[in-house]
Image (cartoon, rainbow, N blue to C red; front, side, top):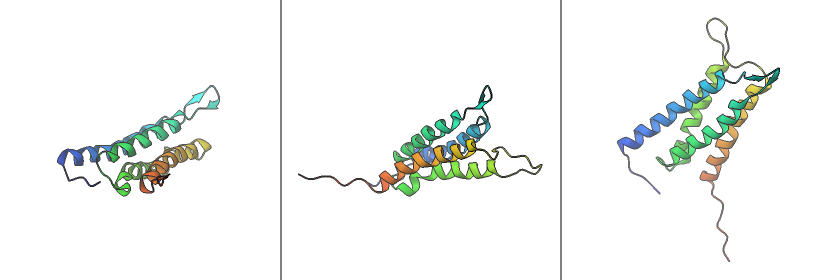
Length: 126
């Protein structure tokens, strides 16, 4: 299943990659959400759903799993940037279990979808 190049498809792919960067910044900024004194990392669940939707959205534009992974790769780049220190030593993502939950929830479900697209289950014959 090959698709020809279309300018609208290229624009949509670029927007999905940019959306991967925007969502990780928003998820990182809202990650330290608390319910009383208990951490409540709701953005980790949001990251799981959004990254799967980004991969499926790229699947409408491209057919190769390598290119379908571009929004998740942009998300991972944004995660690494948010994890590193700035010029003043400030860090958006702190060293805690919520950061690890965000990383795992952001990558594992999207990676599973990419794996299933790259290696589809064999059809059973009767």
